[in-house]
Image 1: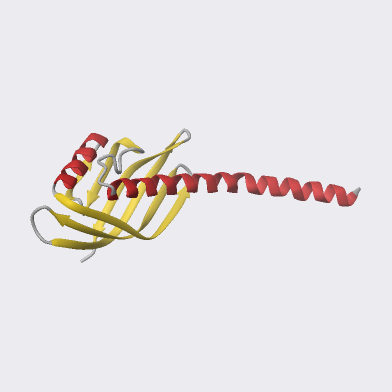
Image 2: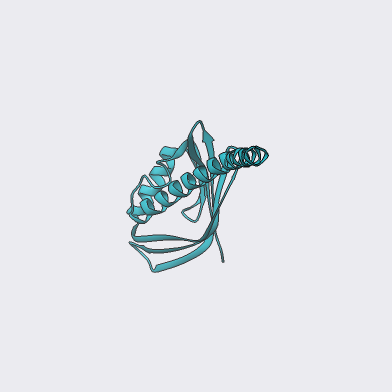
Length: 151
């Protein structure tokens, strides 16, 4: 009987330990999917990139614009204009990392942006990025994007 009780306690401990850890893994997978979807949309020159899962008051700044762009409609307009000004753009994350703390999540790393503007030379830009997410209910929303170019 003691052995059986021990197994029940061990099984209960595994369930308790795996409950929050499993939920954290599910949330991390959700953040990764949102991030990867945004990259795929951007590389497909889809103007909904960075806005499908964005908070209405999201902020974007960095490589795409020297000024902070605030709000989902303004970000969509910036992306539309960027694609109108470019024949080609491919954004590649390098060594993406993800972290969740409470109701906040981050995706960060380095990037390479290869672009061909309609007027001007082809460029290859390198930088750092941070995508900041917040959880509202069961949904993760993008609240800030920072693309910091490296010299």
